[in-house]
Length: 375
Image (cartoon, rainbow, N blue to C red; front, side):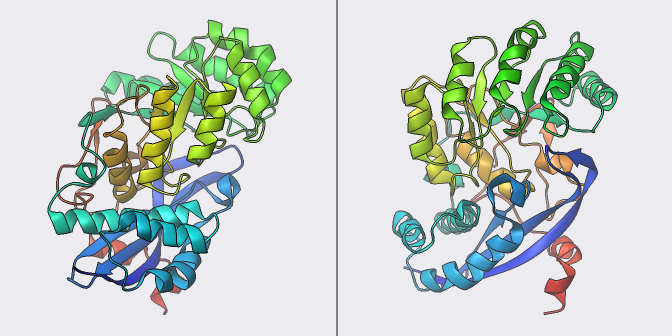
């Protein structure tokens, strides 16, 4: 059997189609760690690491590259890639945290194994439940008028049907008013969820829950800081607008606690924040046992990471809230030969071996960070 021969990383910086406003920063490009994991049989698996920013969970593309190059790679050379759980436990034992970096390695490992066996990655995760998933677009133009116009145009064109808004840039009270204004502006066309990225407080959120309910808000995604589990349970107990856990849900242990404390009505899954696809499936299983539906979150991946998410989410039976895998549509370019696309509000799970994605080497070369080219 083949062994892991090498791990090679590069950082790519790819422009996006329009500025995107997060709770703490506005961005005009997206950075990625591209990993090539080569087996001794010559097969190369690709993985992608990306994060909304170091403000989100403490990792960045720079830290991911450092961890993979200097700490993970020496541990994994000559290991048997078919012993997936053993390989992952080696990383877990020797490297604390760094979930995004570990997820990048696991992604490349599964791509290599899928290519070795001639099967898509979802077959290695237990098989498909659905082969296409509805996609929710994030309205983050920076203004209510821009978000309303963007949402209406998307619905009328048949591209996206449902949306969410990003909050946290303004004071919580102003955020709440702005979100309701957007919901009212789209009322005859669609509905929205609200994502404050943990920037609101209990009192403000409780005060606006009735207004959110009247406005038809689909969910509040991580309204409170991740550590405020008691506050999330309080909001959930109000039975007004469903509370979605995101930043507070990274590990299976987090999922178990949230379920026991009744602190989430919906689980937002993300393969990077949870350290990989296998952990994400485990978390979804905890949610299923607790009667909690799931939502397929995004770290705004290119088609590489999006494919990994699709293989994972497509295998989860309680993914009742669809996904937000609009990364390939959000980027101005994509470093693959055939970028994934959203059609009539849905995205298809790839069915070719591995992740089902082939790199476009010319584009990779075009977007490699300048400091990388000079090495």
